[in-house]
Length: 156
View (cartoon, rainbow, N blue to C red):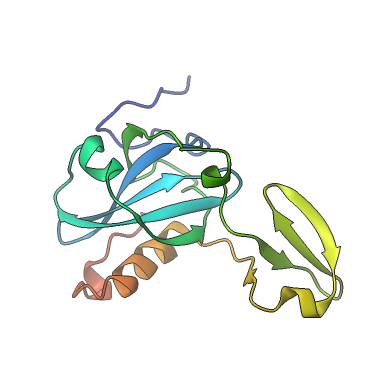
């Protein structure tokens, strides 16, 4: 039997995140980054790093630092569920458009895919799903944190 999500606890299994969920992501050495789950395969990484976790109300006030496409950990997750933060509107619930495909190119935007020319992919982010360990690395790099790789949070 699957366990339900509980505020302040790690996610119990894969496929538990839903759009508007807010997560604390352990980075290592006691530091946490924060993200909100968007529609599709995107996380909105928020502009906040803390030593220890903070409340949903503190995190909900933060602006987006960057987007990242993700997939959840396969087994029990180290990510901590903080609750939900509603979107202002439908537009805010989606990540940016991404392109994919070889040899034909497609752009995926708001859950809809359309065939495009190579020229139309210029300036559009290439689709790249990131492993949870890669999410930790990207947050550490984007915030220029001094957390050596050997001390970064990794899936077991």
